[in-house]
Image (cartoon, rainbow, N blue to C red; front, side, top):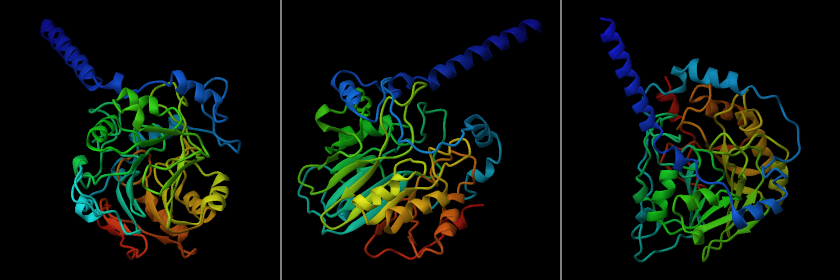
Length: 385
């Protein structure tokens, strides 16, 4: 019997080790790459980076972090409320013919008519159709936002369309390099299926190059710098955010950013991930008012108060920025904090109820005409519990 138990222990240990090897098989590539060469020298010249080569937030108040305690609460307490009781309704995302073109690859293409549409595909992934151009934000099509295909937060809903069904884009805009915003498999897919440039904060291009994106398709910007993808008439400006970066233990080797998207007729603000800080008012004064703000509202907690806003702080940021409409993002797709999955949107609606601010909450894949927004439909309440 003792020999059998010993044998069983050995078998279990070997099986566990094999599973760990399998689960971590993609880890080396998922970590990306550190900036080197001219990229590193450019970082050294940036006021955003210190002598230690690490990026820093703007000066301002800091609150104590309790990340270990908050993470424990996320992992072990109230897990049922962090997932919907019923499937989240998904609308088939916009196909090429809906966006004014015949096919995803090549062929004759008809540009848009100067209108503004936003399709929330989930988390912070949005397709923005801005005055005839198509911009994709923080794309992630993978089942998990993790360096492992077997471990980590899993999707609460399917993607509304396959990656190769995505209409032809003019730019792919990335806010920072965390796994729920920069996904290796998605980047590799977009490198094959799209021709659009990746417009990213300083240092993030090193990850893209390691994953096979040609250098000619990588545009890296510091805060305050702008780029205009060819033939679009759209200006993309990197603006400050209060956050952090990193895909491994060593963090802050790359920059994070929010983004202003300025077209001939409309203006869009994409928050990326950020805590609340005083720069929102300056961004609004310099670049606004905005026709729509894509605002992060989820994954907040006492453990990281300077990195993610609460919904009430998001409402305050919206007032600072100045906007007609907001589409909340960074909620409802991955469970990344201890709050109930539907709490962010309910708290945002309560926080903006007296302002007259228009909050549009589309289902994943639902295309919103910002010039003629739909009435609020609280679809999440039917599936919450």
